[in-house]
Image (tube, rainbow, N blue to C red):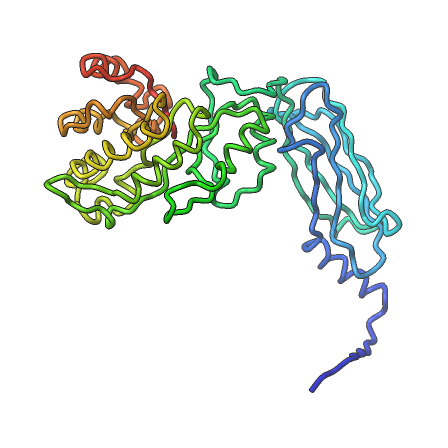
Length: 361
């Protein structure tokens, strides 16, 4: 049964329908405020502008937007409106606050149907005014980086946001079109292209080659397919990178503990991983001889010593700890890896490892 037209009759006055609809619309208003720069991160020299829109109502309802801009202490910096949103303007308007100081701010919006304060809707927008940190060229001496996931579908616009913040490094699983039969990458890594376009340095991280694919040959664990891919990637990108990262948290990803046993602080997976790490490191450095390969470390200094004892040298050169504050107390300065930094550097020196420490998470 296909019904093309439905008509309903009601004795409710139109004014009452308007009142009921306004109450419903206030809960489903679809308010949006879009800043004029990426991430709502403005410089003092930028004109600050927000485009305000709402879902187009089914009835003609003139709307008014009011509110205020507050700093982090809750002090009012500027007022909003009243600013009309009308059918003639497609329920769209612009707000241009004047902010003459750096800091973090919130805009508290109130959208009210004309003549009906009981149906008001509330919304909030955050923005910041930051120093002008943007550079057009990479700054490899910067200590600041961020993890990204462009290979997992993040929109490329995020690269513009990172550039605007002044962060100079990004880390991602490496990508590009790999022809396994030919053992060659057919294209450059798209994340590298984004990094070059936005003046960012890029630390490429290997894929999650699975431990189930490891084979033991004459007492040595091998991952030949991974080694071919690693060498091909490094050969394709030779000269672009200061370093490559060997693997991300093998205790958590790639099936290492599932196949070989162990946990976050070592155990059964560690010796096979050392064989794997040496093979992959040699492959990367065949493709890119001047490169450094970073080996994984935890949020405490626990894996590197075991890697050395298991024969990771000379392939093990530099380490990449993940210095999360997962322990008590949880203040950043009490992070255990940081508190043991003198011990870490002493061990690196005695083991003849690089004194570079790349905290990649």
